[in-house]
Length: 147
Image (cartoon, rainbow, N blue to C red; front, side):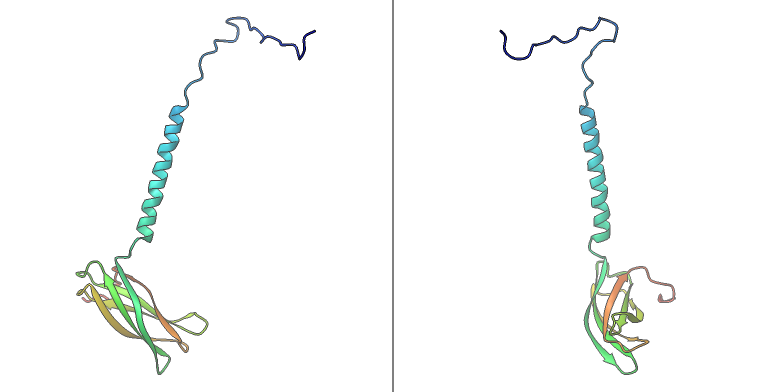
């Protein structure tokens, strides 16, 4: 007696009835296509991150602040920029004890040195407790620029 299950042969199909069994087409081109798309997408993401998260061309940091009478705050900032031939603008603000912005001022940074220190007084609608720099830009509003 033979042990184990009986072996059956694969069914034989009539020749020419179902078409020929050719080799499967190569899918290697799909791998290259997906790789090219992935590289393109990662390149675009890298470029967008560099533009948005890279170093700012003009930047300021708070050096000091002090309260003034009449709901005002004096702030002193250091401005650093990459092109000292262009004027810029920095927005400084005062905040109350809840952290809400209670005063804001746009400070014109004239063309000149690459590093400069400036002071200004910000009027506040309430009692300010701190002052900080909101941001800086080379896009100066018309009302700040000199004629």
